Length: 261
Image (cartoon, rainbow, N blue to C red; front, side, top):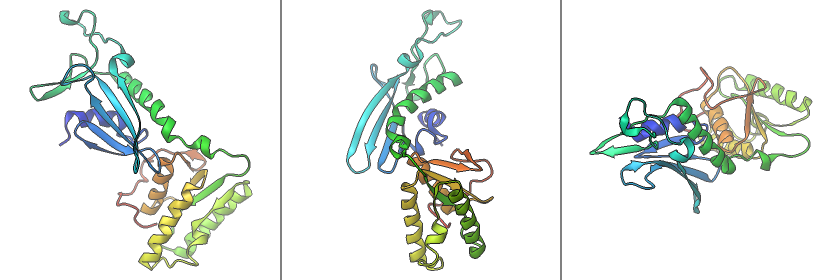
């Protein structure tokens, strides 16, 4: 069962848009920002013990440790909030979570949906400085576009499907990067060692692209690994020429790691 802190952190980061692949422990949330960057978000006390009046964001390099830290104080973001019909708080109250004899809850005032969105926006603006790599990837001329499509099942049919989509990208003036045309001739999909190596090389190819195009009515575990890897790196992911979110309805398969493509 999740604790109160986890419930509140899920309201801020549970959709995976600000922090990739979020996990929770105690009063903290951990996740990814990019290839080598991670982030820790945690409720902290800045003034009175056991009164958590801020959200501390720590950006970390997975090998080198902390990169930067920022504490967002709820009072600075939300101001003094009114507590109607309570004479003890005529001037309002500074939003904070308090731990009183083991009972954890918001003190006097509970944030509204708009309050949570204000906190999310402030956190997103800060984390975006580190996560968003679109500017680094911007370039003149054709884009490198990764072709993300199924391979398993009818392999020959799926390779031809991917070839056609790659041709569409080429005819549109961009550069298709199509693993279906690169790896099957040199890496046997039925050989587990070669197949795993090809999947990992596919993820490396994703890192070099400016866009990932997703095709096909069924998205496999291998495709989801490529989609999430691109999103973690700030690479635009499109299907049907629309930018997608992390979990399009009805298309997300059960996640088991990289899985099959």
